[in-house]
Amino acid sequence: MKESDRIVKIEPPDDGRLKMWIERLKSAYGNLLEVSVIGNSLLGRSICALHMGSGSRRVLYCGGVHGREWITTLLMMYFAEELLHAYREGQRMCEMDVGKLLHSGGLTIIPALNPDGIEIAINGGDCPGLRDYLSADLLKNCRSREFCRRWKSNARGVDINRNFDAGWDEMRSVAMNGGICGPSAGGWTGEYPESEPETRAVVQLCEEVRFRHVMAFHSQGEEIYWNYRGFTPPRAHLMARVLSVSSGYALCQPQSDAAAAGLKDWFMEKYHAPAFTVEIGRGECPIPLGCFRFLYSRLREMLVLGAAI
Image (cartoon, rainbow, N blue to C red; front, side):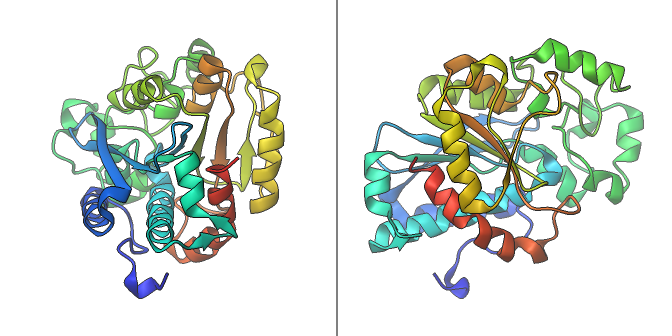
């Protein structure tokens, strides 16, 4: 589709833009798109899920887990619009029949699991309500836009991808041994597994909808993580190879057994089903918007195949 016709623009996806894009997609695509609010962030922002297709064997894509990795939210929204357009127009994407793909299966996308963190990373730390959760020292640091650009956590200073109930105790020990003993810009596990409303929102969704696999998008590194301890199903490696070949991204193992407590890890341990962490792009983080068109063109086929395999 033409860039000039797009609803989703290549712009930082703060909460205001994200809400606007979702409302406009709902208006443009009618009954082809169902939007649900699966929970609310610590500061009360809606966590939305976009549901496409009528099949019962659905796949989940999740972006915006870390604030500074907001490029993944833009990726999710940009892809969702192109997929919906192809669905409505009876077009193919990457030689795949989108209508058949979504009728036989289905895709759910959470564009921004951590909307508070994204807001901090894009617009700075002057968010109403933030002082209710962060220490005076952290609030002082949040006055610096450079500090906020590096912000990964939610509004309580908890790293959502270290808050899932899968190896959480080990990750807490790793964090504390590394000097992260409480709320911070990234790396803190929280006081207990699933302590955060953002974590609970996606956990509850997965308990309600038995997704056949999950893909969580982060940045950066151009890598795909596909296994977790003894919970990796045999088909996960073959699926990961398909994703790797289509994107050119490398398949990777966690650097140690202590790498845990993420969405991928929890889903694999809970359901013994495939799950993948895709680290998009390479270079600095946040990834500059100027890199987005190249990044998207490289990942487009993988995003289509991920919903099909």
